[in-house]
Image (cartoon, rainbow, N blue to C red; front, side, top):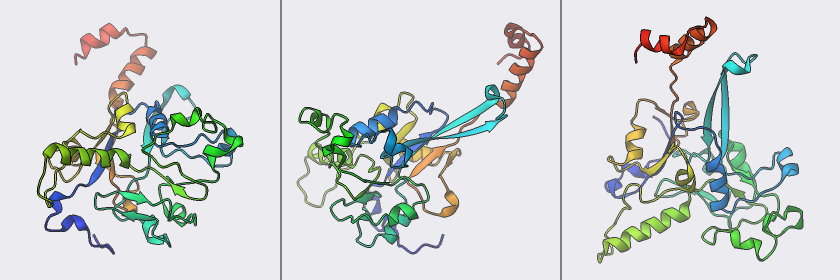
Length: 290
């Protein structure tokens, strides 16, 4: 593949680097929205209210996209696929190339990071993002009487996560893969390794770090880890035959991989036909043992 950038993952000591990635199994996702709520609570994402949502000023770092198929005129026969969508942390990130102040850059861990104090709010990155997952902070939500959702008083501010910056007006923000948890996990790994050599490097164990959405997902649809570790669970899922990336043809090389949903359509059709002709489920089970 032709690209404008030389990947640092091809360096001689690339195996010592971490590349954080995420895999989401659409077979397990039920679209419950628990990941969205967890992301809001973990990363101090403000609640903007119905009026701002109607003007497309939502601030959620995650959303649940829904795709429908089947007979749309008959709601009973419509199939739905839920796809959690957040910043894809692309290796060839189109947002990074258009930022005039380098507020969004690529880290050595494979993250598409944001420097809030450098951002001047041009919104070029949001226009250039094919996934539309970047959010512009229109107001100072945490100190504004018009948005008093328990964040505009001393008691309400106690719900804020002290490990995450409270963003101010006029900056872009997005999913960070819970970078505060990643940094904490890396530091704990170094402490546990009791390293004495300044050049030594200790990676966190697979599964030791969980993002907020992964930790909250009731079905375990979200898996997060180091792609450079061939034995990690997420690395194995990336090599799964069901794995695909969103808008792959754009060549942004996302760090989020989805496992396509599989349905047994023939079995569903058999059940529908038996139901229409009055056959009992017991007879169907005997004739067609599983």
